[in-house]
Image (tube, rainbow, N blue to C red):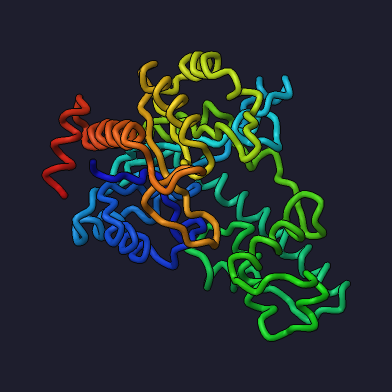
Length: 351
């Protein structure tokens, strides 16, 4: 069975990988033959993805990710796929057109929300500098320098954590003032800095403005204007076996997603047990949804590109088959073909 990973972030948002090339090299080394780029608010990595895949015998899928808000769910206090914020809803787009076709008002909306996201992180940088000064730590982070040297234009709070970790290196006394007794592994350091300083309750936290979140329907229309398929990312079961308000009743969630115009769903497989992932993915595929899986890689930790679940080192054959069928459907859509079988033929000829 051909391995697929349909959701990888790159440095065009934030990634464990230092470059698109590194991401593709890892995929090739692990024999993951179908590979999807899926950055926040960005299609800027598509050209490198398109050029790099054939050189390694890989088939490229093109995606994007947004954070939206559903006003109805927010008013009802319903937690959807953000367990901390009612109404806030992550949405991916799958099978977007390449070359990029987005233009006009949809492009303006995308650029505006991306600029707002950067501005929010810029405010966090200022607040972080103020806190460092109040602690007697002689470190000042330069937001524009971080943007120029650590990003491809989209700045995430993880970039601030990385910049602070780099600035603290060699300043043991200052380091101890910030996070006493912290593990010295870079990924662990960055995760802890982000958690303690930049997230809600931390001294440098800045809540997002409402304009940072487009309405769900607007995000769906942007994805469709870019040639893609609006896709709902399921969280499913967390480490304690809990589900969000929206996702706990699978039948109801599927019906609601259909009513909202979704025909595609995805899962980040390391979040879930094999049993729950098989249950949810099988049911949703039977209900007519395109189902795909990915790993994200949007943290500092380097994990395998080949997919696994929370309780198994690889996907079951059942899950691999679902993922393959989903990839073929996405490939068909991306190429303007009208059947999953046509997408399968396209992939097989390319790899």
